[in-house]
Length: 343
Ligand SMILES: Nc1ncnc2c1ncn2[C@@H]1O[C@H](COP(=O)(O)OP(=O)(O)OP(=O)(O)O)[C@@H](O)[C@H]1O
Ligand SMILES: [Mg+2]
Image 1 (cartoon, protein in one colour):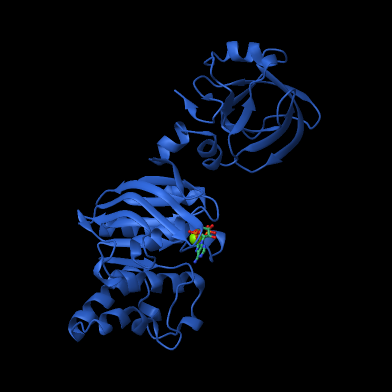
Image 2 (spheres, protein in one colour):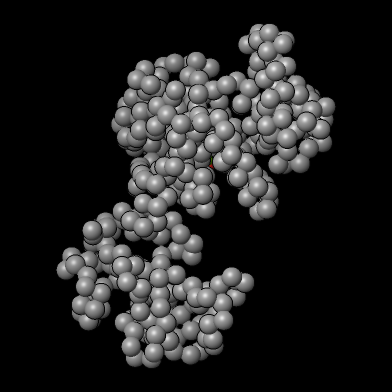
């Protein structure tokens, strides 16, 4: 069991406030992803949970027990780093067994646990090799093996896949997902990649500048972003945002927008190209990018910022033509002047 509870958690480095009051509950067995732009405090928050950073203010509890001053080794957590942090002079087997040896685990128990981890991570043929003789993905699997054998209640991952190429990232992502399904342990995973966040998470915690912008399921964040930041962080290409000026009265009416709406947003795949003159917006096509499974059309919109829309392959659209656009029903997000979502 490991249910984590963060209350008003704060971290300052001298005058730098890195974490500015975080309230969060992570359920037992949940896969929780911390996502956000560089410098928003993801690693700091994870390291506070691991016990590698002192907590400046607030409380951190695991299953109701205060952890603020408990040593890292006594928290029941194991961390996997982006840099792998393997011992270069030890073999794969010795690397995975190292922590258990330090804790004076019996030889037979070490053999069983390392054997299980090696099988689970498909490292059987590599146990005698040294880290320098492994690929990045294999090294990362060894690092995960080292965490598994300690049988922690909570796994902490800090950008574990960032050093891998695109194909291997996708492969390792599914492996981590399967590992979670198999072990059913609480996992916290830090990434700045919104695709990793969407595909892995039960719960996404979107951070910016040391604060939480939104917590929810991937579905919540995509379908009901709570503010402009969340709206534009999740989803690629990002949501198109339009500012409603005094000249936009007809737009406000045709989209039935709240009178407090100051902005509205439409995702690239929520546009419909309609007959000339029949749409709510009109634009001139600047670029049509072919992706194989879809096309991304970049258009300059009269009176607004340029947009990107996703259309099925085969949509015949030439650069320079003018298109008329509508939003698919129920796919318009409205935001107030302060950037917050309007229900
Ligand atoms: N030891 C430190 N001393 C001073 N400031 C620090 C220290 N460690 C981190 N910070 C600051 O705290 C903030 C959060 O850093 P953190 O490493 O948690 O960001 P991050 O979200 O993990 O970013 P990235 O995606 O680049 O890894 C940053 O502004 C950083 O400069
Ligand atoms: Mg980081």
